[in-house]
Image (cartoon, rainbow, N blue to C red; front, side, top):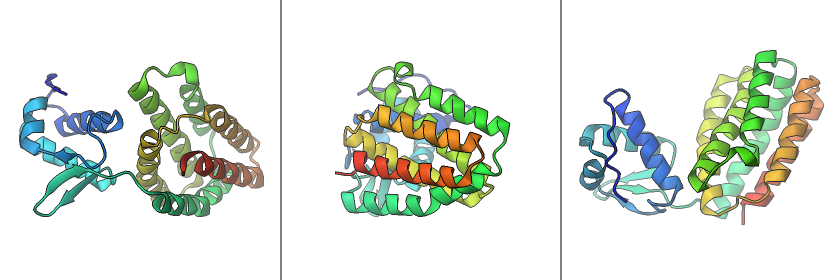
Length: 218
């Protein structure tokens, strides 16, 4: 697919990264596809420098691979073993963060959680990419805000890397079902945080992650 839209020089590498991510999410660049730098640079109307920078940023999040003598390619879809291990990691970390957040969260952060839930509502989404992009960004903001409220900055950074794999895997597996269950789980988690109930927040996060694993992992 040709993509010759003009890109401004400001934040060029970030714009290229976002454009490539969109194509990966749309599966225009499917798992395992080789990424020819010269061809992509011509399509996007940029030099190779911002393109390489964008690919390196995607590689840092596990969405692109850079192999010696082979170059860049779209990362393959994570297998079930990897996804189970990832959820095991999240289940050890995020319920604890939710419990901490319940006693520390600010009204401003609660407002951001409410906004993220509104953005994830089904009627707010349009088309395959826009639907996924909107939901993924809001979901990452929801979980990231809880991690932020916990006061543990390294955990928030770790979750950002995990979320990238979660959302790409969800798209690849066409696991767009379960929106109502996810919304209900998020609402219960928000209610526990609003009540400043650490035990309820921990339990709600655990239930949400277990439900997500059941919906996502084959």
